[in-house]
Structure formats: structure tokens, C-alpha cells
Length: 163
Ligand SMILES: [Fe+2]
Ligand SMILES: [Fe+2]
Image (cartoon, rainbow, N blue to C red; front, side, top):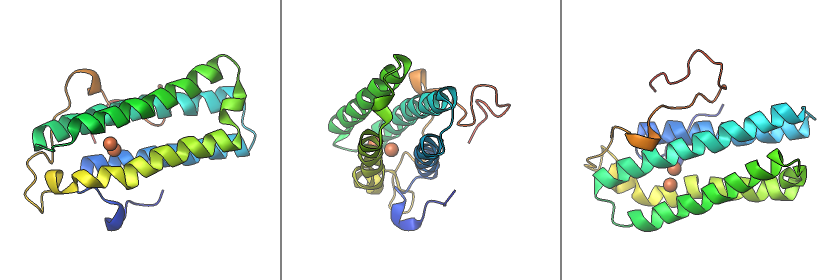
């Protein structure tokens, strides 16, 4: 996995690590489809992607809430829209509608998520970055965002280990 370069960093190590995991899961999804993996394998990658995205969004929102970032409501709405797209893909896969993962649809999903992480998320950098005096560099996740899902799958022994 490529490491998150400084130009891609949002200024917070926890959030950068989440973004790397999500970008890696998007690559894994492409690989699974393009190498003709079974539907169970593809579906499991989709599941982990959806679960981890939800976990990451709640963690990011908790950190932004502590940081005083002014556009938090709009940012939360963007997360909701992304989650809607992700859930839609997951539901379609569960219903056997695999066209939800055709090249175009997958590219669209990948673009939406990647653009959010690499462009939109950078807007909060001054608020969460230690170097610029951000207050929320290590905010604890509570409630829905707690209990980090393991990107390696439900049976991995690293599940819920701390970052
Ligand atoms: Fe993010
Ligand atoms: Fe975000």
C-alpha cells in the first residue's frame, strides 16, 4: 500500500490512516472484480468497505466537532450522501444485481470517495492539524463510531485493535 504522502495528508494521523485503508479497500474491490473473484469474495470486500467508511465518517465527525471546524454540518451531509451510494451498492449486490459493480459504476463510486478524501477533507486540515494548533488531533470516538472494524475481515485477530 502506498503511504499517505504529505500532499494527501489532512493533518491528522488517525484520519490519514483511515483514508489509506479506504483507498486500499477501493483498490481491493477493483482487483477482486477485475481478477474474476467469486461473488462471495467481492461481496465481502464491499461489506468491509461500507463498514469501514461508516466507522471513518463517525470518527472524522467526532474529531471535527472537537476542532471547531465551521462547516461540520455540510461535511456531515456529504458523508451521508457517500454512505447512501455505498449502501445502495451493497444492497444491489445482496440482491444479485452485480451491474452495481460494473466498470462505470465502480469508477463513479471510487471517484466520489477519493475526491472527498483527497480534496474535500483537506478543507479541515487547519482545524485538526497539530502543526497549526488544531485541538482535536486525537479525539476519542464514542457511540456509533466506536469499535473499529478490521479491514482484513470479521475473523481477523486484529479486529478492534487500536490504531
Ligand atoms: Fe475522511
Ligand atoms: Fe470527510
